[in-house]
Length: 183
Image: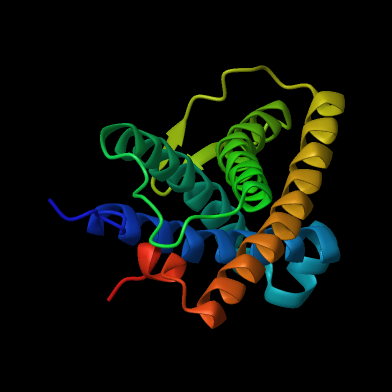
């Protein structure tokens, strides 16, 4: 039987869907942080600002659900072998970056959910309001939102490393990018 060097189509689609959602979430999140609530209102208007916050929360919850699905798929269908094996340091670096990305992509939506609830705001998933799980606590909310920001910055740093490694392997044409590419 021939070795399989690619993720399943479901895993590849999920990877790129999560990537797309993440780019949107990071763009909105850093806009909120950079402009502040009033700056976003002044720039986009109150109605659009409220929609942006609802979308950010909704797609954050969707990201959490997709990451849980990704973990299930990873358990059912483990990562494929490498066509060209990674070196020891590459394995350690790759494994560490992937582990941190997984932890942050699970932790950030949960932290945002708790920060939102502690702030007394509705936890929205599109047209549904979800339970907050914790009571209003402004100090806790501010602290959780600060951690949420730090997590977003950490994800950007990890993405730079992840994308940089992908580009390196793409130029080497060593089969690594074929593992996760869609076509």
